[in-house]
Amino acid sequence: MSCFSSTPNTAAKTKGTISLLSTPEDQVEHNKNRVASASVSDCDFNYTFESMAEVEHPGNVVLDDTNMKAIKIIVQEAINNVLSIQIKSMIETIITRVVDGLSKSIECIELENKSLKSENRILTERLVKVENTLDASEQYS
Image 1 (cartoon, helix red, strand yellow):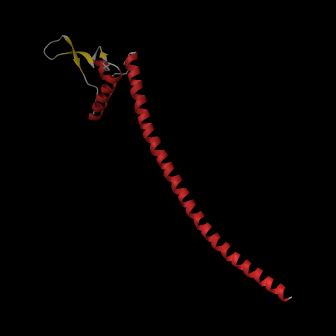
Image 2 (cartoon, rainbow, N blue to C red):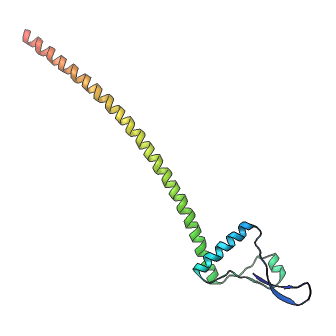
Image 3 (cartoon, rainbow, N blue to C red):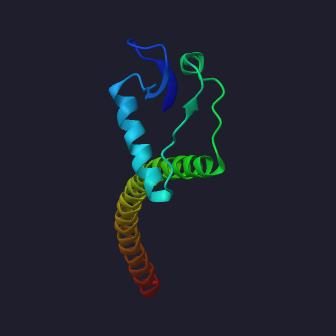
């Protein structure tokens, strides 16, 4: 970022560089943006301020179309990356819950099936006994 400021030794205005980043995290983020923007285009996100008042209150910063497109691409990629991670995590959670639920249902059905087979065997044995008893009683009558 460039601005006009006076040097301590002279009253003449010279062009200097001022960083508006306040924390190390902001500096890291700025470096990421510069690297990403270099891969998208050759823009450096440079802003020119005509006075120190604009540096202290940078409310109206004008960006050209190239910078805006680069910012748009970077933001879209960041959002897509975050969303893809979150969606993948949500899908994995859903799949795990569905599989767990189905496993429990299968276990319940297997237990019920085993119980019904046992009950069916007992009833079949009773039916055979009743039929044998009925056949024997018909032979004696």
